[in-house]
Image 1 (cartoon, rainbow, N blue to C red):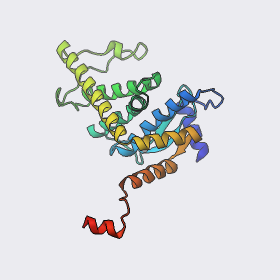
Image 2: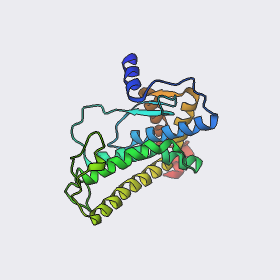
Image 3: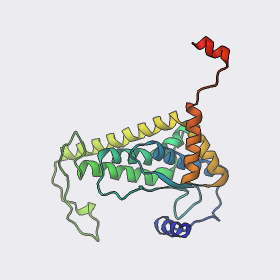
Image 4: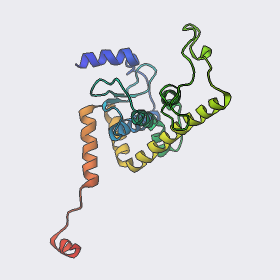
Length: 232
C-alpha cells in the first residue's frame, strides 16, 4: 500500500524533493500552513478526512495535506462545497493567526476556493441571491481555452452580482476558517510542532494527536473531597 500511495502522490503532486534546502523560518511557516488545512478537514462535518500531512516538498508544493473521502461521491451538496472552501482557506488563516502575515503559499488554495465558489453560483444554482439557474455556456475551443470563448448569456448586472456572490462565499469561508483555528490554536501549535520535528504524519498519528488534545480540552479538573463538598 505504501508503494501504491507513493505512486499516486507522485502522479498528482510530482516527485519528492528531499534535497531542497529550506530555512527554519520557511519550514515553520509551511508547517503551520499545512496544520491549518488538516485541522479544518478534521473538524468540519462535510470535509474529507485527512490521510497524510507532510512538509516534505513534492513537485512545486512546499508541503501538502492529502484528504480523501472514505466512500465514492457522485453528488455534492452546498454544505460540502462550503466546508471544502473553508478547509482550503485554512493555510492562509493559520499564517495570519500565527505570523500576522500572508505568503505566496496560499496561491493555489485561493484559486481552488474561487473556482469552487464560482461553480456553486454559475453551474449548480447554489446561490440564494442569484437563484436556481446557470450562467454561461460550455461552447468554445478546447485549444484556445473555454473561458475565452464562453457563451455569455447574462447581463453586465448579473456578472457583477456573480462576482459579489463569489466574493461573499470565499470571504465567509475565510472568516469561518480563521474563527475555528483561533478557537483551536492549541491543536494548531501541536500539529505544527510535530510536523517540524518529523515532517510527516499519517492518518492514524494525526487522529491520535487530535483525539488527545480534544480529550484534554474536555476533561474536568479532578477535585478532592473538600472541593467537591464546597461545589455541592
